[in-house]
Each structure stands twice: as structure tokens, then as C-alpha cells.
Length: 72
Image 1 (tube, one colour):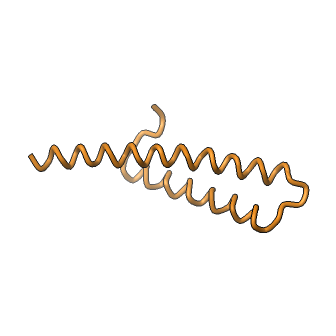
Image 2 (image 1 turned 90 degrees about the horizontal axis):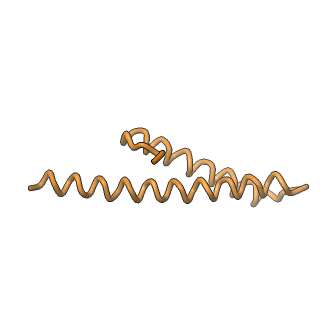
């Protein structure tokens, strides 16, 4: 009884993690292209791109530690 709930919660949070990972990957690629296209990017744009990259790779590591398949 309790183990069924644990499995259901794990699946739910895994799905949330994958959705967030997908969203952050899109955000990071957008920030990266913005920095590449700018002739003289400001410090704020560069720091936003670095922050998006760090968030994405943090969630990648979290997905690996949970043994979640990122590709569907």
C-alpha cells in the first residue's frame, strides 16, 4: 500500500523533472544564441546565459542520479 504511493510519487516527480529539464534546455539554447548574435553582449546577458547553463546541467546530474531516461 505504501510502496504503491511511493512509486506513483516518484513517477510524478520524475515527469516534473523531465518537463523542467526540457524547459531549461530551451531557455539555455535561447540565451546561448542571444549571446552569440550580440556584437557586444552586456554582463547581464552573459550571466543569464551562464545561469541557464548551470541550472540545466544541475538537472542533468539530478536525472542521472535518479536513473531517469531523458530521451523518450
